[in-house]
Length: 258
Length: 295
Image (cartoon, rainbow over all chains, first blue to last red; front, side, top):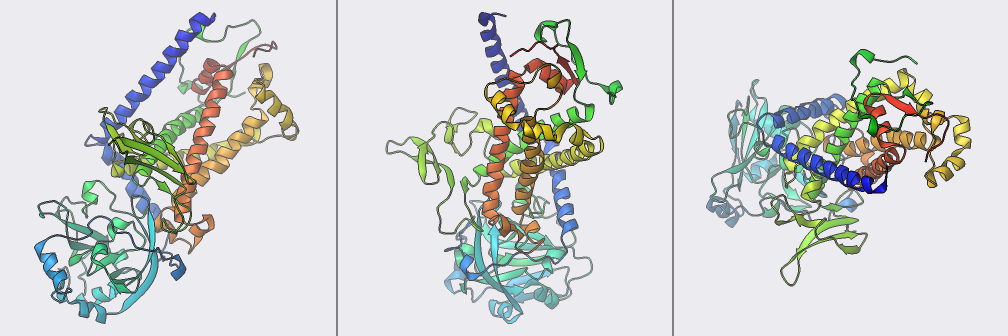
């Protein structure tokens, strides 16, 4: 075969390859926007959760670090200062009027002031916060052991999940607020705390004052900031988008262990 | 040689002109069994999607660090970002180990599908999905990670039990003694032909073994090291590879080493007879030329 014939063939092949990959890419993007395909992809989340639970015990502990590992500052992500009138009023008097409402499927619904929460058994831990975006930061957290809070309100047998309702508005008009959920296994985990101190000082507004959840074996979006109310539920199917959290309703995995 | 799964064989018919000119001495040799062919192509699809969705995941935090966290006091090893120039233009830049390069058009800032300049570490044409969409990229990544792992375990089991590993992949003593010779021949683009082309050569065997037993399992392990849940498996195990951000960096480097492997692999496929090689990975049959050497 002569060179004169070869060049157009090579160019033809290169163009064909280029066109085929462009088509394949457009196909991927089209699949991402269908109703059914993301559901197929989401089946991997169940496998992720099942595999993670298979190889670890219920109480496997997240790594804890030394003071020397602390990040210079703990990055604030998402909302840095909820601008609602209610939240601003709470910050104005140093959360003196803050009451954490705990209800739902519990025997003894209660409202906890910050002093009440500080009176419950606490835990201090230096852990690594892993954001779904990819970054990590190490900080020291002190807070109420969630198992102690649960002991105070006595969950009913039907309670399967704990919902967290927060003060950070997710829409400009202040209508939708952040929400998250964990299952009872994580709720009773020794490292699950409602943190009120960060690096030995009061939890700053930028990081979720007056309290934020720490659920150390999962990614950052599980760690709800500005927690205002807690509800134990049998199912979150009828809450907001039905996926158990603000980011979950935007397509992120409920099991955020990876 | 027994022909596995011949009844289900997947054939394509190529026009004779595209196949190497047949000589009297040539014949078709059954080189790749059906399971190897099927698993090879599943792997091609899975790794392609893992790479492209991985790049989209990288775009959500376009920095790489070494250590337990991203805030160790040391600067990023790699940063692919964008900034505005004095004249208001969007400049894409890549900073590697402190050296900065203007990569406008490809890295940092590039044209999106609609033609407008978009700030993104990797460009739209290199990522799945094409636009910034971390949740969807993760969904693709984990789904195809499972396909990749199941397919890989299937390959491993098959390679061991069918003796593909022992017979075709493990280098023999004489292979190892001829490494220098093989290297010289590769550098001169002289490749085994005729009867010798029926076996993998020693560099080929070593490359496949490094990928199968080195890079691919390490990529999976570094993926595990990024999982906060799997971090709790054994206290401190992630620090053995330098910490979670180091694992993320290694995952990224391994991905590009795999890309380098694929580029060399495809180059070798092309220079040693593209259609013949392609056919052998589709139908299993490889045309062996007589003893005449062709280069």
